[in-house]
Image (cartoon, rainbow, N blue to C red; front, side, top):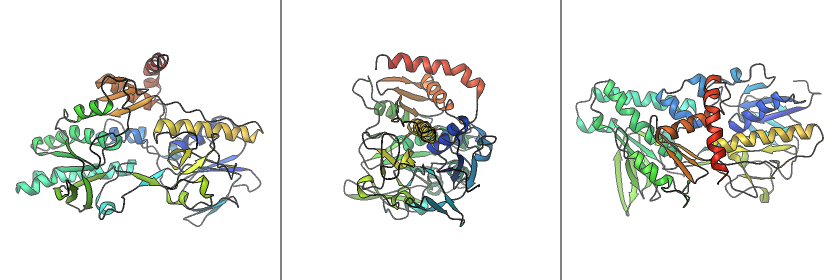
Length: 423
């Protein structure tokens, strides 16, 4: 990098970071742009379920950064930031490389949180990236193969049982997908699909707590999801009000009604929670500009109050005047807002407050079935809901799907605009 040239460094290649870079590159930004991420591929998280099931390809939802950024002028570095010196405007990477910057974008996202539960980190599968989806798929297929050759019924049922810890949106979507998908995979191997179990474990006594349960909807998204989970190829089992206490390679221990109980499962997926990236927690930021959990309190312009040359968004930051959900639609809009303000800053113009609009909740509830909870007031279910969910997300894909966008873009705009007028 030419050290005399002004530079913008973007840490994190998720929705916020990647789309900040892409928006800047499309607007002839005057500074050099470097995107740094520990992975070599972008994971389109909302559609990892389609990647797991084979409904979509890796080129669509798990593409390489080098392919995405080809011809953009954005430099990609696969590395991990180990420290950021905000006062000195420099950062250190795990490889030993050092970078100085004129502007910095912090978009590192969150990491899985295991709440100190013994064995959870070692014996569970996360489901946040394409790599993790691939690992889970490979493991599940191995379990199914072994089950076809296991005569002992107890051992076979253990191989055919999947425990999912956490019943937020990720847990519900994963449970619905697997409850449709695993019976198909097992039947193809000659197995009896009725032996498969998918068990959703949650500490709370309800699923999707706090998600889109407006009183204006005829049925809450909680009710819709509950019905859908019970009507998959195999019904999802609910284990609510259960606190996981320990995870082993072949079982999960939990407490329910003051009793310690066990579910034997060869596969345990963990969707129970996330925490802030440790690098963000260790930044030299005044206490009043960081929450107790380590999130950055940022200005409406997406800047750090003490360091106006630094912007932050996505899962590592909270705007002080509102609490937005950690979703793709929010992160995408924040990336665009950061890019717009970086452009304004470079031209000496006034910065604008980020304006993020929430279209509602989009939830995958099985193969070919979803619910679109528009503005958390109007529900469209089943296959129509699935079309809306996929269409909405596909319009955000960094790789062009021109034919699909051309035929469905009008539908999405029409639906959202009509409902927005009465929301």
